[in-house]
Image 1 (cartoon, helix red, strand yellow):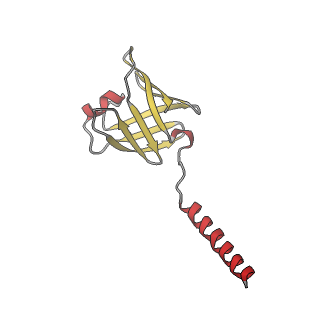
Image 2: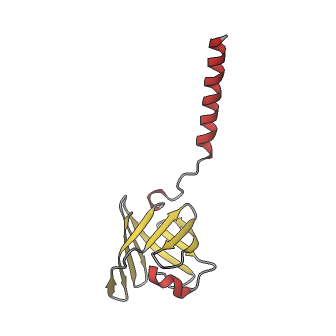
Length: 130
């Protein structure tokens, strides 16, 4: 009887763990799905080093954050080395401190496990994983 109860409990535990891990959503974009800190930004030949500006990328959502700034939330699509960003409720001037020129932006992506470079026109933004 005790053996039967132990087997039943073990079966329930296995089934629970299978369903639990099946419900977790993993990254869609590989190493791109992370928190990235801007280390340098080159725009029109002028390089700056923004202090505490971050891109939070996970699945199909991006959030831009910095102390004292409103969080800017957008949607993204990443395919074939191109990152497509859309910020439907943000103003273009609110996105500029993160190197984004408008409500819709397209970047070429160069990615390693700890570094990210986004390039669009004359803008080059470099990040490190945070």
